[in-house]
Amino acid sequence: MPNDNQEKKASSMNFLALSNDSTAKTFIMATLVCLVCAVFVSVSAVSLKPLQLLNKELDKKKNILQVAGLYQDGDDIEAAFSKIDIKLIDLATGEYTTQYDAATYDERKAAKDPALNVDIAKTDDLASIRMRPKVMPVYQVKEGGAVKQLILPVNGYGLWSTLYGFIAVESDGQTIVGLSYYEHAETPGLGGEVDNPKWKKMWTGKEIYDAQGEVAIQVIKGTVTPGAKGAEFQVDGLAGATLTSRGVSNMLKYWMGAEGYQKYLTKIQANGV
Image: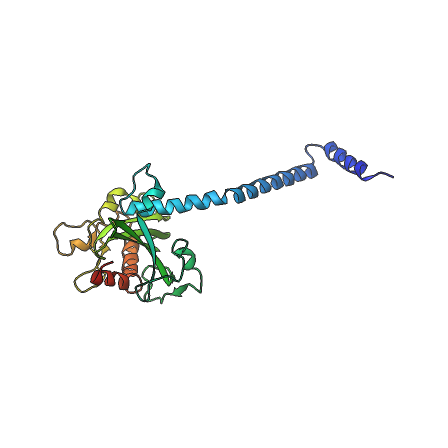
């Protein structure tokens, strides 16, 4: 009676004896290749995950530094980021909160967590995001012990995608330093021009609120006429990308408004950082 080793040897011989044109042999080889590849991909994903998370965190810090004008190619990101303090704001009150760890808080995950988010009424959802976190981070750029800039995360829908970015504001809570997006899927050459350095420079020095405290900053259709009434609140539209331009305006109107950072920035304007 054949033993186990003899049976395995016989099975191997039977497989090798199959014709290369055999459907069974083709199916078995394809299955084996798939299994090997699946194991390789799984092992790679698990082993590389810590590195991926580190790179993701560094990229976020780099984008925060860039919108504040604090990064040049080749700079040590961690060293440059040491000038920044992270605090959390309760958007309902505009006050700082220590309920969560500011260093590890992820506002994008919070936006999907029913315990950490709020539903936005359809009439208020100018940014078309449906939900927002109750708490948002503010990145405070310090110089000589004093806060020089405030960097605030923003997001909202454009034409094809949700745009994620940061707006940097002077410590007066009113003057814009820069606006930059780090993730979107807008059309290259059209809505994708939100990445154009020339367009991004147009935001520097613009103001957020008018004399009545209303959000006035907007992307207009066409170009801004220097010195014209309201020019301090206006940025050139993106050529051929009306809906993306409108999305940027709506996003800022939402996040700089009462549903977003307005309570916080109003307190900054009244009392300082």
